[in-house]
Image 1: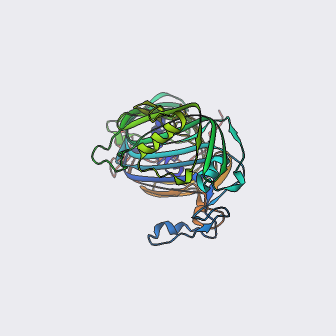
Image 2: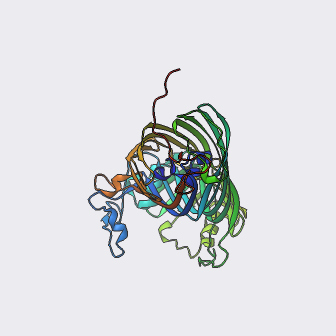
Image 3: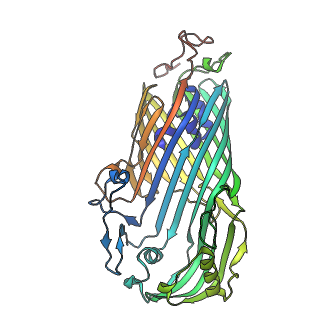
Length: 477
């Protein structure tokens, strides 16, 4: 959500990348009403650009075109990319609820609420992806002994989030300012699961048989389902809990020398213009521990012979788990390990560099580098971006140029009209330039109240200084 998290009107949204960035805001009070972010990207399945249109997602009665596979008899909506590369998927959904930010002198306070969901599949070998999507009748991979010694897997989690953020202006001398900030978030787990494969040695001789010579894997989940009959469980939505943390620091080189502002009300605080600023942060550090309806399993270097796989009909999740255990151990419960599951958040290192070029023109360069704290965590792909923007109090436009996961270049666009921002980091999704492999769309709706806006006569503490000066080059002494 670069169009709503990077600018000087980002307000409470800036804590998503760096909690210390609240002091960068041109507002002293920012009230969030709602917001939405929908993101999906993968490098395995795609819809042909001739069949794709973004507006089909909004047509409830639209029938998506299908095609027949060369092997098998099924009709499929997507084509598979068989380039031999490992496959990755990342899905991120975020619904921002009510929130607010208040800056008072050297202190800044923030409150956020959100519903979030995140899913990632990481380093899945091409042969595994083909069998999962195309089925065991994919003839080109029959009678090949695949020996996989790399880790691969997937994880997903849905949760509610209530966060408190605080930032403090730690240092302010001459043209230099340093602010530090942190966020603490209470996490309410709704559902989660993971699978991590450490190694696998297998052969598929035909479309109904799979021989596993050796496998080492862990998997577990907590879902709002009755595992004996797959019926949805009503009532208790929260299945687990935990905490998440963000920490950050921002250095700002201001346009004018620092001075002490004597204010009696938060609205009297004057915005201080800058030449450039640099921020670094760690975000989404934490995990959710599921204890309700949670099960954790493991397969420790075992072999298995699966015959008539195409005839298996699992009536419930419990029956499926029992069958896996029996096929590997000869016992229905031998794979069971625990009644709790930990799912870690999509943690990332974030860095932002913002240059105030001239007047309303700015240039931002940012890096988001995702990392996992556990094999049961979500992998957040890396993103590096350069974003020129035009920014005023009532209108803002930015053009993010980004490189996703070190391999996929993208062009985006975000536009803000006062408190409403609509944007995307993938502008090509609205056209037919390339095959459809994912989408990105977000918006926010807020009520921003600028610094120095106490009334028609300006702030009492500093009359007539309610607007930032134009950027001018400093004279040499």
